[in-house]
Image (tube, rainbow, N blue to C red):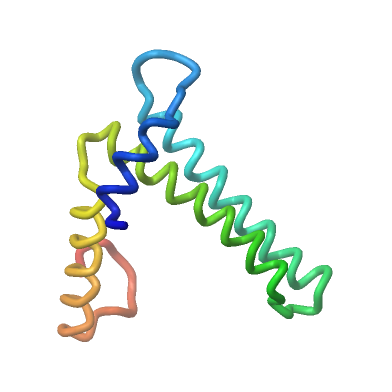
Length: 109
């Protein structure tokens, strides 16, 4: 499955609480789900001595799916192709690597 195929299929399940400004809803959902992943990872250290076992991996896998869903919806709301977002990111990272700029601060390095 490509990102664009996922984006199209997942859009069918996007039911927002109100009309308009759905990019805000998708953004808030995205950061909420990312926070849930952080909580699950924190509990790996708190409850399991930092060991990432298969059960915890599956729990995080589900949360990663939720992050992907919100990324797809936000991309849709902004009129962006998820395939293009992914390609742009890889191109940016490869350019930074080629120029020795993977480390450091700033968006435009």
